[in-house]
Image 1: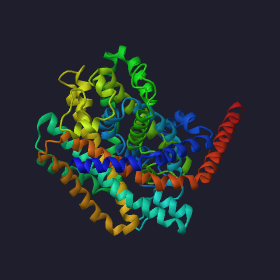
Image 2 (image 1 turned 180 degrees about the vertical axis):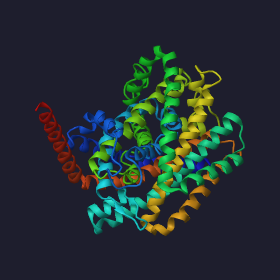
Image 3 (image 1 turned 90 degrees about the vertical axis):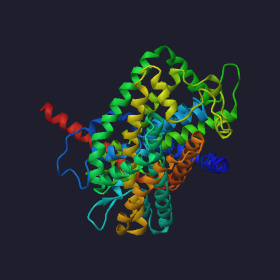
Image 4 (image 1 turned 90 degrees about the horizontal axis):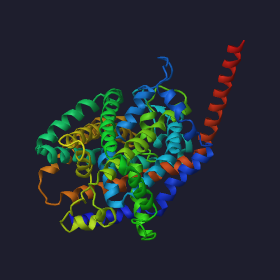
Length: 489
């Protein structure tokens, strides 16, 4: 296991090296400036459009714009917000949180562009459903000579969905229930597989319906509990922000100077966790937004970018503050980038736990006797919604390569993967923390491989995004002006 963990760490360092970070942040910055910062100035407008009452004939699609966003959020609000943030802080230090913020701020423009392209270049499949995503806007927007890039995204999407959206989530559910309640992973595997099968057999409409109910409900419960913990430790909030900003630039302690290695580690883990959490630039969310009952690409793009705000800037930040203000991580661990080496040695120093146990311990410092249960419950529901949301992404990537007839076969493999990933916890390895760390390294690596083809396509199609956005907001201003003139008369 140790050898495999080392190999995964090397792959992760290669995938998330400077080229990927420059590409990810560069595309976000390029779009932010090219869109004249509307991805930041139109956030309020976006929420207004999200809850706006729409005509039943407002657009062709399978789910409402709200359900499309909830489906996208169902696959982003998950273990990345609870276990992923804790892993980023443990491995990359508190500074990783800062780079998560940067990724999210720039990611709003990227998510906007993905939403625009998803609706603009979607098509109708053999069953009469609206389908889209990076593979479709590459094929229909860039032309036949770029079909290899569309195929590359779909291939990485299949593999990434089975790991990031399936194995990591199912394993996290089994691990959380085993740690908190000593549930038998074999029983968890059976029950979880049946629940997932019940939902995904109904396709995007059933997934959207379930996500629209579960995601808002669980997000509210989690945020209320987290805010109670932060309020109880309000005096530690300034110190937490100090740790975040110092760590972001390689300053782990006062007077220690800047350490480039620590800065790069914080950046790498923060950008990777930020992308894993909100998926801006990864190309998964536009697959859901392409199914929205909305014929206006820009309008859906505005709604799509809200996912990054909700997921990373709100939920992930709240999780980070709970951990950093609770005092559950020792100063030695906060200043130590070699957490993986400590885990490989077979020992986990006190205060150096990662993933769910770290977040649960932070909640339990204030909500004694309840914190662990709240975290476990929320994580299981979040991870479940992630599994069902990602199943749609995986089946669309599969259908792109192997046609619609492959979807039933993919669903069988999907449920089997859920079963095996959760069942795996029944085998005692004595290296549970190392297994968790390795799972996150694999997920990070596959996330990066998915993002590359999508980001290249967004750059090449950026003129389309800029043109449609300009026309939309010009028409919107003209409409508002005309309405005011009529009112004055």
